[in-house]
Image (cartoon, rainbow, N blue to C red):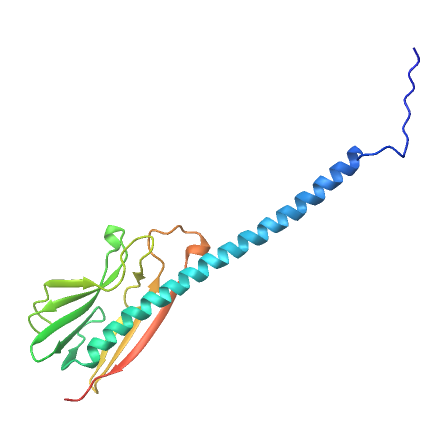
Length: 187
């Protein structure tokens, strides 16, 4: 038996070299495509986070502004607290609460008081969402503060950060600083 092996150029199909070259090119294209897709997804996550911080933070500042504009008297003894009186004898306080010892988000809380700067015990509600995945973390003073000026102006500065429960990856990190000045009405 005589077997003859011959290689002819006109047979159909791919050679091993052509197949390997095709696989390498395909792998490079897929690697570049998946890297670009991952980058777009990370940018989208960060944009969503910043947008949520801006939306929720603006809502908090608007509520505080609305209350302070109609106040009869305002007092900010520390950068953590803003006390005010409205409707003659209703006393309230907005406070920046440090919850870092409990691994929860720092928050802004509204409480009812018996007078300006005294007896604030009845917590009415928390203005900032405290959920560790979807809430807001309020930076502590000096990054966030209440300041009252004798000429009847209140300056509010809040730095809102990502919730403390999010991963430490870059696309989940972000902060935004919002500030406002409120001029009190003269009664």
